[in-house]
Image (cartoon, rainbow, N blue to C red):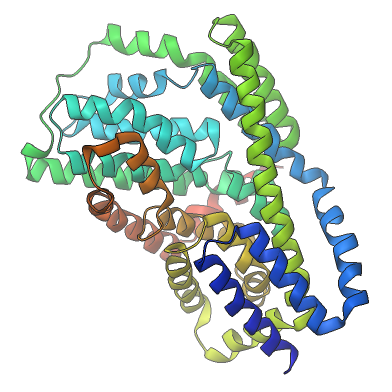
Length: 437
């Protein structure tokens, strides 16, 4: 059996392990270790095991992940994010389907603090779904809105997925973050437009809300302005080059703590829970990433990236064809696998393809992250759907929640097509940032 055949066999074994619910990190590590042994023998395999995990985990760039996670968890436990839905509702409730559109706006704002799709869906679900049900909104529209809107946590900075991509692809985090801003806003706009069209055509889906006065709007701004200021300082500092991503995360976490203390909403118990959640999430991400790093070495030794690159080069697909093929691959994988696992599993093979096709790695990272968002709400393993199901209890079945997100998948399809047809939606802001520097 040649080396490429061993690598492809390893992928098949990995698929089986994941299908029987072996944890992603363990499945990646076991396949990588077994494949390295078959390719290079026992001594070389132990050499890879001794060096690769430490070399990867010791990277200073990875320290940005726990810092941004801590910022998000502190903001959540200090209830700094509670007012985001009320803020969006104050300004958007006058629209047809105003509460649903407010939920999209609140989720976009929440995503700019947490960087986690699951946390965004869970938090917004507890606040927004009861508010919509109380106003006699269609249940399918209510839960579908939150499940889909929560996915923006994967794309809108500070995204953990984008941070990991930046480290694996060796691209600037600041350029990747700023490149995701327009696609993130475009996603929110697509969701809101879809809701607006549906409710306009069928008003029974969402009873009209009276618009709020300027007094209520200004009151909502007074409640949330410290959080907005924190986000502006953190990301403004990154984009202006004043501090690195890790420093920005640390400053954001400290600012969240200080704001929580000043508002008397952060307790010692809440801070302890935020730290514990950060440790658990960081450990989980690092274990998966180390398994992916081992897989990267295994694939490199087997020559799989060169093999796939040759396949694409001889296919005659061109840049657009390659992107469409990869989009189909990600949608299929996203139906069954964890988003971070999908990305880290495929990057060792896809990065050389992007470089050979002269596709910007910044652009590719944003597009792949958007595709991973879609996987969060596609059956049968749409993670956000199960998060919302846990939040709503027996209000609806899981199948009904999946049906509720179908309209949002159409909106996502529009966004993906826009990103492929107009790459400037991703690259314009990073190019502008580079020119100004």
